Image (cartoon, rainbow, N blue to C red; front, top):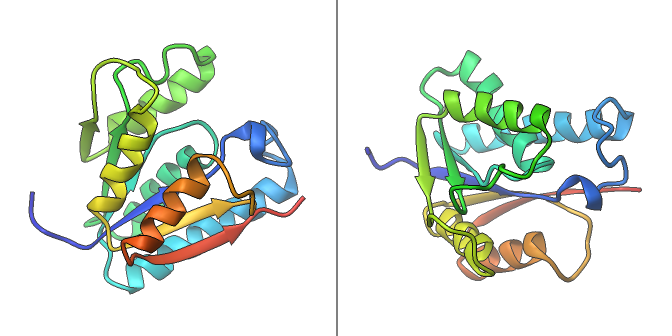
Length: 168
């Protein structure tokens, strides 16, 4: 794989978002627009490789936004960083179909490990940060959880950060 500037993403799952699963909610539509704008900023900063952790919620919004970006910039690369093989196994059928449709369009797929264990999500997040120069985060300000930990790790590593705040 050719060395390019990478941008990774962290963000909340539906349970932590004020709109939950309702993607037609104006707040969700606004967040998706903010993600697209953040991707444009990353593109303008020279990022060509984008890494999604493929979790439900904001990770999938990000991956879909990268696929839309690729329509305008065919050289954009999307990598799925899966924490373990069965990541979507317990999801509802329509969620698994969405996940698979995104995977089918990814340029690269990285499996951090085969089986689930307590640390696999953190290892996936560190994998993404360690390969990136920039992080886009959808963050509600809560000082705990995976998004907080990933954002803190990225800041310690000196990544450029683009924080999109979730408002109620």
